[in-house]
Image (cartoon, rainbow, N blue to C red):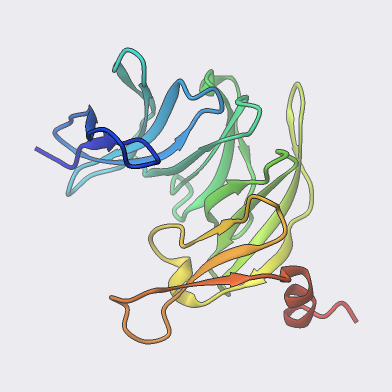
Length: 210
């Protein structure tokens, strides 16, 4: 067996529901805006990772993106029309966007020089991702339409090297103004959560425009 997917109500009431059982390990990533589907990763101890799609009403699951490469970190856009993820098909992780749910209708590369753990802004006009060298969070304007256009990337925030590794240790605050980052200054078994209240001022301090 593997790691299964479970759910529970946000207020903690009721029991725990097993949503999906698989022979390989499962990692939930994002729920579609209508709450109908869950995107997850399916991975064995050895072998590539694939992105799956689970119907939360029927319990039916299918592989949405699968290949001999690793596909990770699927995040559906706020309007439900696009899915961002990262893949190592080029020899290193890079961020890509495809139409959703018809993922075979197009593919656009968002990152340059490597990228992972993409995250949409709440209005869907920007994508954020982690760049590895040097470790930093990048911010990219996107223009969804009949195609998908990507603007020039800018440095959003310099980060600690640990945050550029496995897993997304940061998030955007719901009000769009703050950034939550995971910091590991000492004991890696005891991470701290740091709320950067004025991230624009912090960004200007770290990346002067003069």
